Length: 108
Image (cartoon, rainbow, N blue to C red; front, side, top):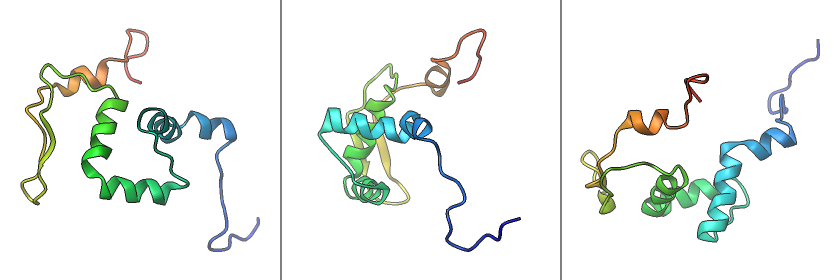
């Protein structure tokens, strides 16, 4: 058995798995829809915490959240506790969770 040295790469996904990953697809979508490009995960993270409202709006759009009433504001209160997200939106978790499921494949 080969000795494992701290910091050594233990596993790497295949090129196909990386291309199909949700994060990869989201980054492509951000480029197409927001003209944003991130050289690495750390750059995406920095953007997500510095442009909080834009980041969360983009996730709402990317995942095509179904709502019976739209939100008026992504983030009304930044205070913690007490932050108010997607003010006025009305949606059900169940509708969004099960929308891609079929009788022969109950979960996705």
